[in-house]
View 1 (cartoon, rainbow, N blue to C red):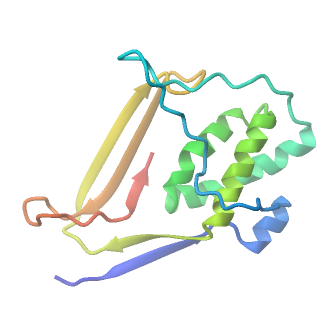
View 2: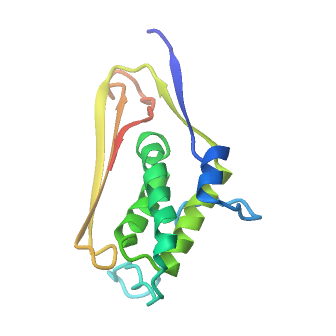
Length: 174
């Protein structure tokens, strides 16, 4: 079997993009593209729901365009290479029609994450080309959302031929 590794890079925050977004990086590195839901310990079977966003003031129209540009710019890299950005982009995209200060903070965190992790890549290994699909679904996970799905598709070896199949980079992330 021929062993080949192919790495697919994606520069997430180039100097040209930083200038276009008028981006100022945070002093500390950001290792999370979005805020995480803290675990609520308590009653068995309690749902882990996000709190309703605070009622913030809407942003002026001149501040909306940079947010939309942020979503559009990072969407390609997120779909192709850095799928950890997808939940954050989804949340920003659902509120970008009427963005608030909270949406602006989410954009800043995503941009800080992209600036911290400049050279992101996906590594592909040769394999037996079996498509693996892992999926999950949730109900009432986000405010004003009915359903939420997630899927991760990748090519790998057949489990009967190899004891520990190599996990390749994703072919599709939903």
